[in-house]
Amino acid sequence: MKFLPLAFAGIARNWTAFALVLLQVVFIFMLFGTLQGLNASMELAMAHAHADRLFVMGRGDLLPVALTARLQQVPGVSKVAFESQLPCSYHGAKDSVFGLGIEPANYFAVYGEYKTTPEQLRALEQTRTGVLVGTVLEQRLHWKVGDHVSLQCFVPQTDGSKTWTFDVVGFFSQTEQPEFSSVLLINYTYLNESRSIDRDQVNIFGVKVKQPSEAADIARSIDATSENSASPTHTASDSQVAQGYFQSIGDIGFLARAISIIGLLSLLVATGTLMMQSVRERQGELAVLKAIGFSSPRILCLVLTE
Image: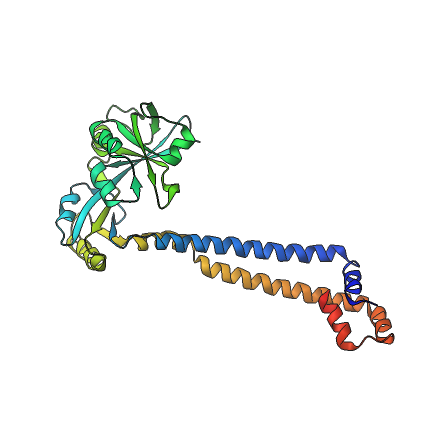
């Protein structure tokens, strides 16, 4: 009597139990792989962080655009850029479009991973209502250079209208994380002059430092100079911002390990229970195997194999 056919015959006694255990194994490893993939994405984002870049944010509020000059005077700072957000929609709420009011030259100097041609960057600077469209957004909405687009935005203009019009003058791509190429880059001057609220305010500053080794000291210096002002700041490095984003989701590595351990323990319990049930139901058969010459270790191996 051959060993493997006998083992398969034992499995065939209860296909339902076998299928459930198999599905449990597949589910546990799929869950583990998904969590590990998310953890790897987090580590990749951290690896792409720029050691020579800081982010200056308000402590729960917007920051005055006039802070640009003060940041530029901090020793060790090379370039300063800012973003002012304009959430909009195109042809209904399902087509959301996110705009960022920027100063083009400074923005592309601080964020070197954002790429466009010199001609299109110059067109943005020279066209008051001009926008650069991210490649991801362009693929979704199929806009072309020269298109005149109207967006419904949450921020009203000075005349009360929430319809903003822009002229597409070019495109840009984010070479390190292409999914970030899904926004519009708008001339801050046009945005600031046209909106009825949050005048001369921005959401965040990007600061490029000359020496990455001095970034922590520069961050402390920036926060210290604004500590007693009307707009206190919180400055963090590029990697700290990425880490904070993922920490808001949770400790992915810990979740992956915890869920894997719990899943494997539950699988062990389920398998052990199934094995005990199989032994109880087959005491007669196992006694016959013992009688025809199967040793106790061989019978144990048979049950474990199943």
